[in-house]
Length: 397
Image 1 (tube, rainbow, N blue to C red):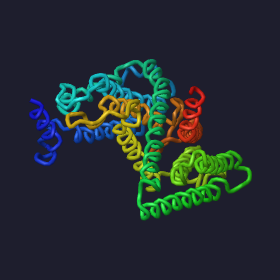
Image 2 (cartoon, rainbow, N blue to C red):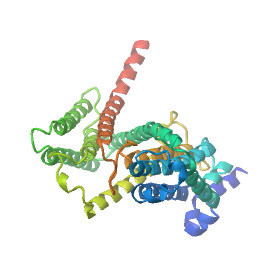
Image 3 (spheres, helix red, strand yellow):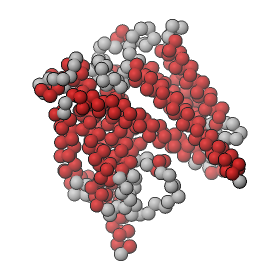
Image 4 (cartoon, helix red, strand yellow):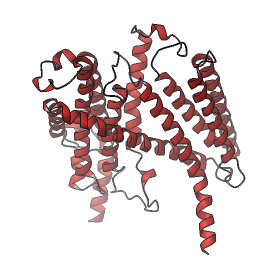
């Protein structure tokens, strides 16, 4: 009996090799392919929210139940994003409650997660349509809740990225790798620091051209100080975490700082080419498309990384175990739906967003800065926590 179950599980893993994608979609139940279908649904929802914001205001004015919305055009645009986001959130949170706790490939919930696509597409369309019939007050309440949900998504993404960096550093330690790997390690760490310093210098040139740009100078200088702090703690003899992790974390925080400054409204002399931002050029469109794809990729990659959130890591993975946590996967996508809504409305339901823009506004800027500080704090705690734990164990004995 056990051999039969094991062979059926192996067949489930090999179905991609023996069957066409179209047949898998209609009849098959493959958890690996299911990830991409859910990612495609999330991408369509994100693009639908953007289209509703930029081009759907005229159509939305015809919906009588939206008459309570003040400042019709901008409010309708923001509410349209929140309505699409609410539909996407409802779909994935329903999938979360129906698949959380799934552990074996032969469970009915595994088939529900990996199959039944026709029913789930109908369900997604229904969940996307229903919010457009709800009164404006409910949508505004969801908008307030979405701020918290988007913050949860950022925290999950942050922990996932730091866990990957720590895992990479752990597998490249001198006692675990060859001399050639150490050469590659030093080259990677050196490149990371060069890119970090180059990025900081460019931000000073582009976003702090005058001494009056005090806020941007503060952001950039703080990022440089945080990079030095992470490096000092990592190289401390008691920590001895190496030079790779602070270099990679430096890339992450420099990128967040750059995103924060780029999110500032284009006004004054501190943002380069601020006067030309009223025109939609190809660079703006390309930047928008890249940002949307980045949201989807970040949500997708974080959703399948459930191992770094497991409290018990000593459990062996059997052949008939699910390849990733289904419940966690859908929960990340549910919070990701709130996150893309916040980016498209600039974290402010009363903010007027221009076409082909994403994550613009002072609220977005400060959310990024707080995210940068939180990333450094989490990283430093992951370095220091083993020392604190050993000290407590020593004191108790």
